[in-house]
Image (cartoon, rainbow, N blue to C red; front, side):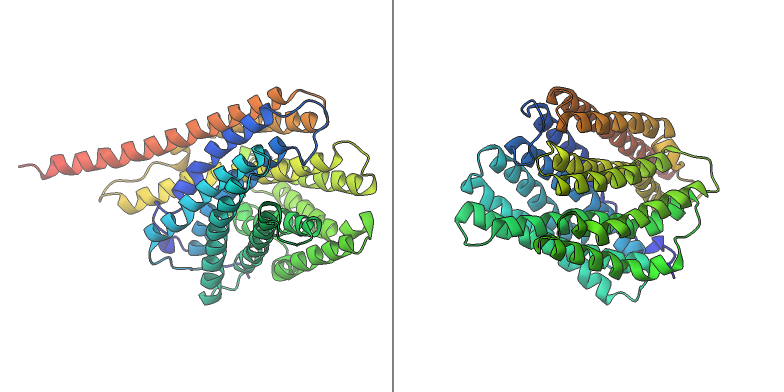
Length: 427
């Protein structure tokens, strides 16, 4: 059974907020990398492509997913963060510095002077985050679907980070390791186990809560945290053993089942269609199309751009679209929840839509759809990189402005309450 969130256990706003606000900054940097990619069908091993991929995966999704996971671990799983300020500094700054150094290392030909410090910083941030999260889930009495799913995703993050460190050592320090096998498992654990695994876990809570849908089927909620890692492992082993396109069948079947379930639940929502639902529908469509592109790439490696198209659909289409759909709900909700705690007697916090209006999310939805389309055309060689890069930079600027305005409204509300209290206290 899915546990009901308890907002009394929410961590202070200063813990998740910096991660959420950092995400659009890295999205802008990823757009710049896209803008300077060479023309023609994209090769996933191009330096600009590798930099953009890791800026999206670590800078954008890594920050957003860490911020959201810290909040959900506390609210849903009951994980207590006893020293939130210390935890913030331990995780936040190594993640930002490591992300920047890693992108610079790719752009400078896998420079060991940049690659190895980046691996150390990112390894520290991700392994500590995963370890803290897994320890918290293990210590928590919560055993609901979201808690189990987050634990499974954190275990995949441990694997992805460890494999990334091994890859950095192989490329930057000459470790005698099979880099191709390491790369395959790194991508599978990062994209499948961490990204999609966390999306699956969070969806069980946020889709019914924010979109007023029925709950996910009881069997899925009971088995998904074991079924999905088992399907990924079976697909990874099949790929290593040379099964070709057939290797992806177990993972594809479970992922498609999740996408279909989510789409069907949203169609049964008790509230009119809003932008949050459209973001999720776009993410689920990108998941299905990304799996189809991956099958095409596995069946015919000579097909130009199929692997890169799959990566773009899964990383941006699934990851960024789902993230933005939650970002525009979670950010104002966190601000509203904090205002509820600070409200003086007789005062009420403004509604979440007053902090971040629906019109802002609607603009973001349209720009995000344009970015997804332009990126698909770019990786297949249909449009120059400058077009897709400019679109992504525009999306980043839009998200940053919307988030900044929401925080400014929050601060203005707190300031007005303090001024009113100070005025009432004067003789």
